[in-house]
Image (tube, rainbow, N blue to C red; front, side):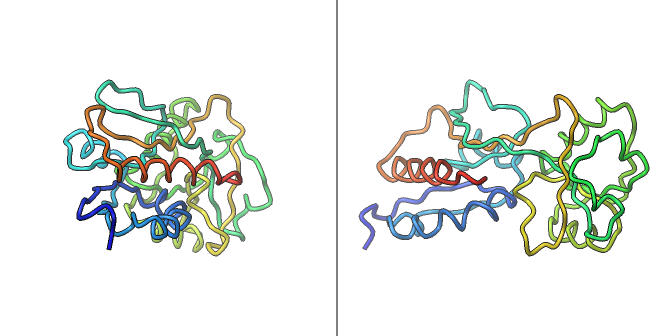
Length: 215
């Protein structure tokens, strides 16, 4: 029987961050008797942030392109990640390890929708580069985008944690100055009352992210 009784934590987890980090968390959550107390809400970071503000979610792991510094939120930066260009292994760019965004003028892009912060990072790069990229498709579904990239429909723009070895895709670093970063933060409402369960959960999140030195 759980020593945290019946308490539940509505926990916001965006798909990309969840796919990468939740497997690292889950075994320890189970061992510490926390996993059964989580009600996981999967959505894009923008929607999760809105639900935290409304009190519908207690804790969220949120992706953003700027550090979160809002008065009504308690935010703790966990990681900073790069955005990268994603291509198929047989794409003409596949031999490159770095590329400037302006050199992608003639490429077709397949992108995540506005539910994800990726689109805003992409728009920031577009504005700085002075050209309008050819976006042929946008989707909420990361797996569909990966399949389209693999099939040569277009190239992608994703944070580095979105691509795993089993995807059989290649990630190319951008060399642009002042390029956007993908900030991963633990976010709660400033007025949230912290229970022993909350404290145990947030301490575990901090520890797992600190131990994940290769990411």
